[in-house]
Length: 428
Image 1 (cartoon, rainbow, N blue to C red):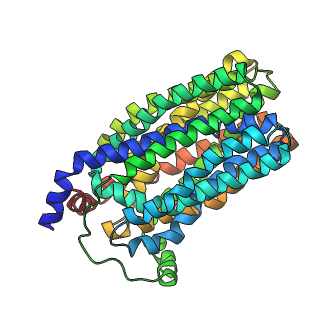
Image 2: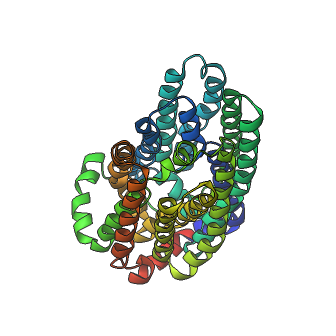
């Protein structure tokens, strides 16, 4: 144990830098294909229905969220996580670059084929990412001490959003100066480049050797133990209920850009402006919320994020023209920052031991997958049936319910102080 602790201490700065660059560049790549602005606008330019546009966040959510629990048992049996991550992570990076060619050569000839390939690509990227999430987070947990993780995610995401500002500027210029297919192909190509460089940073992480034998439970035994775990850890179960409601709070997020373009008659070049405001709100939130999370706990950060989600829906509901609408994206950025900083971090802290971290992350991800998939689709259907503004109002109701539920959840860092000592032993 002493040798492992010494190894972790010697390589801590290196690993924090490498993992931070990996995460930051990956997030920068996602900014070029923002699911809140660029992808809905791209789909709308191809004549997609509101249901198809709603399917974009739905497909991405089910990819990110469904696989982790099923990968958790395998992850816990791995003595080293990095080789497993490197073996599969190409499949969440290369498809983005390939789709740049599809957007350039296929969009105008076969828009419906392009839409289908877009959804397939997003499902592949996010499914692989979801499968690797427990292993990657466990790698981060070993490299970054508990009381630095909020700032780690906040600052690395902040660095990524600086790249996101460049992405928004490029998007605004491309959509105003280039043919639509060329502009969107350029966005996908830049996303693939950023994700490719992040792959190199991930490859140079120095993983600490295992401190104990890997878990021996097989998949079915592991899955069968989960109902008892949820009954035993009622606080975690209440947190999961609040997270379900948080998805409802963002039910309309995928339609803000489409509403601005189709109803408020914003020019298509405003997509770049919306992305810039989204990124600016996110940057501001990341700097502040990472600090708050390390000092006050992640539950408080998630409450702040949900208040921002309520406010963004209120602004969207009451906006009478394009002039007042940009604030929606700034508030959405704060909401995204809160989720980035704390949603995964708090799952690590709910775990009573280091060995169970992949399981807790897997439960948090996979249990939410049906809601993350279904609610955006429901939002798309409701937009057609009752209109955009009614869906914005529904988001307000969900957001308020989530905040109320979170007040019944005790922050695990303060609820069980011994978890900190267990985690510190494995990360120091």
